[in-house]
Image (cartoon, rainbow, N blue to C red; front, top):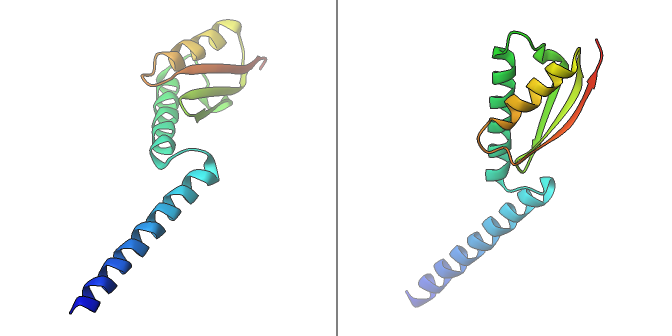
Length: 107
């Protein structure tokens, strides 16, 4: 009976070590935790949704990538005013820490 209990404790310890190893491996692939990946995906989706709702902006020409709350905008917009509006909308999304504006002016 005593041997069974020790064997069970060893199994639990091994399982915990494997779970820790797996979680550490997930983080090392992207450099972000699972929660950070989800948060960034939510931010990207929210920004794209808001841009699509804006009738004056052609959101299909604007790329949005988020890493740890920093949003990278890429693509082209026709006017400086539209570029400023895209940045303004992006900054208004809760959770955005910084906006890196890589938008170019042109058709």
